[in-house]
Length: 149
Image (cartoon, rainbow, N blue to C red; front, side):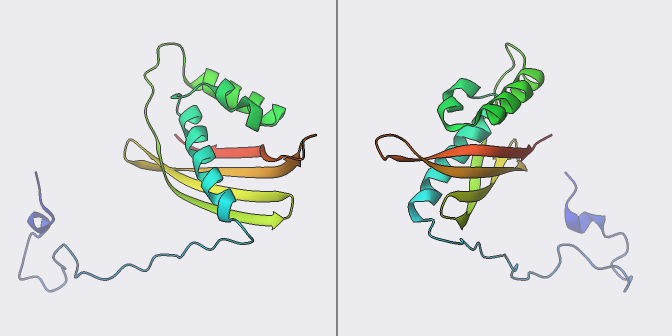
């Protein structure tokens, strides 16, 4: 294994900076949640994890059927069918961050980052609030995009 300091070919050369660089405290962005997202954020984190598992072939699409709009369900089904055939070993993703923004009382936008095999990937989700005949409130995924290679 080659270490970073082994890359220094001429320690007397003033133009070459030895690695590793002096430690600096990284400046990380602070997540900002817009609107009242208390309970919704927890639900979105669970939904994003389930969606990541579907995208990675770990969970069947039909398990998310009740929470997906028909066009999102079809889009996800086509993707999973094309990417993972029968017998494809499923890998396990892990959602590491979720950000929720309530655009109005009836809709929210969610972004999530998940890690799969040491690489980061992204999911963007559009949600709409719905009320059934029993006056129960539920959220339905009406749009979903993901970036995975």
